[in-house]
Length: 144
Image (cartoon, rainbow, N blue to C red; front, side, top):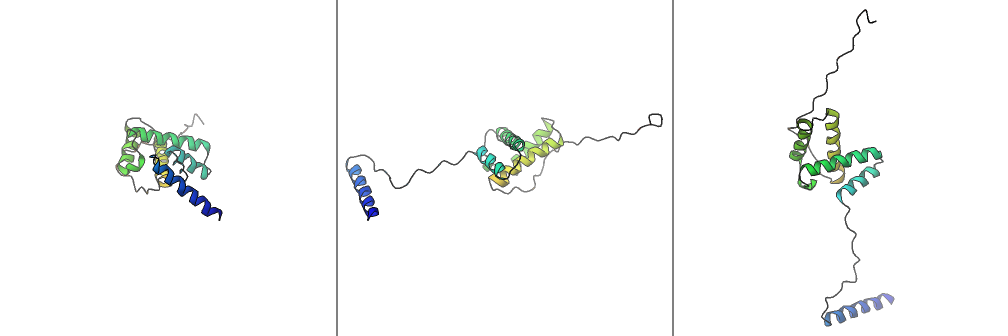
């Protein structure tokens, strides 16, 4: 009974507003909440997986650098080629270490796999940073 009264009231309001020259108001559907921004989605995905706050901070930083490297293009528009360009730039232009380059790769792969749900295959053509050669420390007989 109450439901029919509400419907007739809504119909009456729509008819009255359309006769008065005002555009009809859609009363039935509430506004949908806005989709969270990309970096907020990344933070939420990291927190859901109970990663360390420091990991969250680092991954968000690398993802920002990746986006700014490609002139603020959305990552959904990019793929393996752009990832390879970014990682190669880190090694050749920024001269980062191999572990830093791997950290950047893991952050970008997390973005694509866990947030954008886009599977990225093997990233070809990446200039890899050189791992330092460790010389063994050997003592002479006199030093022993």
